[in-house]
Amino acid sequence: MEQRTSTDMNGASILPLKKAPREKIVLPPVDTTGAFYLSIFYSWDVEGNEIVTALVLPGDKGETIFVDLNNDEDLSNDGEPIIFPHDQNEIIFYLYSESTPQQRTGRFLQRIPQFALDDSTAFNFMDASGNLKESYAKFWKTHHPGFEGAKGTYFFDGYVDLSRGHVQIGNEKYAIGLHDYNQNGRFDDVVGTRDPRSSDRLMIDLGKDGSLNPMSTTEIFKLDDVFKINGQNYKLQHVDPYGARVVLAKTNEPLTNYFVQEFEEKQEEYGFVQKGRIGENIWSMILTPLNGVPIPMRSLKGQYILLNFWGEWCAPCIEEIPALIQSRDNWTDKLTIIGMLNTYNLKEAEALIEEKSMDWPHILTNEHLVEQFKVNSYPTNILILPDGETFVQTGQMSTAFIDNQIN
Image (cartoon, rainbow, N blue to C red):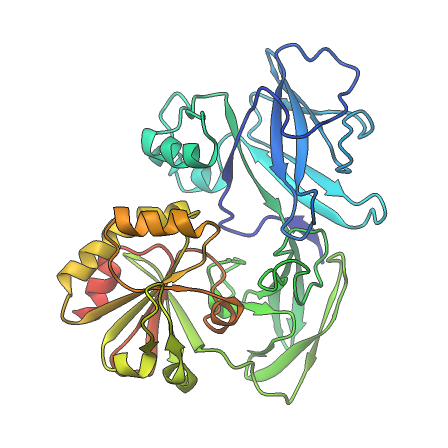
């Protein structure tokens, strides 16, 4: 593998500057007058020590940042601080395990997310002065009480979690990546130690568009999947634990069986969509909503069925609720919506369901459902067509996504 980067379309989250550290920390021998602190989430797969602290010292030309790189609650033993000039948009650093230095977890801080700079959408959620717009700041305030979104009070952060390289298959060369999905510094986790859903991923640019896109279900595989390249089935024979190398091998084993299969992808005016075939085994499934009344999937066959994978913690999931409600109202006689809820706080999710009048059934997802539908990002919207054999899928949806299918 050739380089370590973030996944394409990596969505950065807000990291507010705080007046005090969240955990007890040994400070470096510097003047901390006017200092701020960052609480950086480390990994889903670290038990009891998930937060890394950073000390931020503002200056006329930028910030001086001390990061607890070895996560030992001591900022005096991590080497020289990071200098973040005001005219620089991004810094990258690596957290590491003292016992295994090769096991590095990459993080970045940005003033404006790179994806927003690339497609000129920065001012969709920031004003010209650098303050977060009210709706965006309001969402993050629910996660960080007291946060107002003023310029200079936050960074965006994200993961450098993709080890990239290339693989030669016959005469074709494909971009390939190992995605450290649970951000623990290892790339060979078939099952996460804390969350079974947090297994690492293999990404292959089968469409040869130069992108390793976390929304592209057709190009993302679990490490134990059997997948197809140029008509031949393959599986991973070897994965280096630290993302340095992978080996693919041909196999006669059948493709891994999912509810959604045989994808095609296309960029439409209303968004990135994927089309494919629904596995027959989906119709034997019985869903149990929060209200406890079972729904046999077979009873819905012949309708347009929208499976909306969402969570109360997910900003784009909240943003698309009006489009879901409008689609429900526009197509009452043809469309059935089922919420597939991946929740961190069920009470908050139930309150949101009531507040927004999301009066369709909601199912608590589990490892099996998430895996079977190959959901890799939130929101994911899967529209099963009335033939019961095909589906159309997108990420954050608009009413046009539904209208173009039903029309």
